[in-house]
Length: 258
DNA sequence: ATGACGGTGTGGCACCGA
Image 1 (cartoon, rainbow, N blue to C red):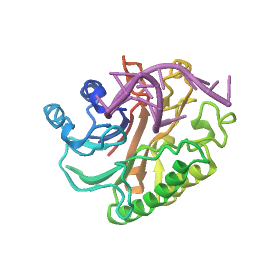
Image 2 (image 1 turned 45 degrees about the vertical axis):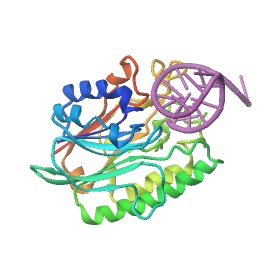
Image 3 (image 1 turned 90 degrees about the vertical axis):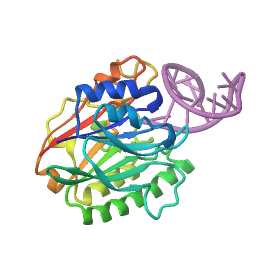
């Protein structure tokens, strides 16, 4: 089984690249973030032709998430129950795989802009609500995978300039404490289960030749429950699509298990 | 200190992302 996550920064623009990527990387399911389109404009037909079905929680201009899967999906949840949130950032579903059900939670975490901003307050409130949601989901599903654009660089080694960016957005102790709180629920950062190249990142700024200089952050993550962890054999970042013409600023992350 | 790049909207630039 392979599950991926990719912030594609507009599905309208990136659909051809997504279809290309799925052809060379036939994952069982992928969580997409930043669709930037409404459900009516979601490309169900094109994905179906590629062998995938999808459930989505779209929104105009900003946000928007989807789960695209080769397997049937059930029990779809959109947004965090109990959180009054007008932004479409969460979709969860159960993948009905031949090896049994796998719960997949796909999130586009709040950016937060700057630690002294209202958006940062929203980010922390959103993170606390997410933790409660994931906790309740874990109580119901032993095989659970939490994927998405977390907008948190968990450790110094996840940033191209940990000293210079200390205390700035993605790097604050508060954000890192929330990431740890998710791990404390019984989840494991699949990427760090394995030896990885130095300076492994999943996002690079479009500006200032960020990708060419590898000035990036590792902010896209795959967290797995213990039942999945025991079966996990690999987790990689695929930098190839970042070299495409008109790339997303994020690269896909893929976990292999079972 | 600022802007740099890219996507979106009903635009003639502003806003947002990270």
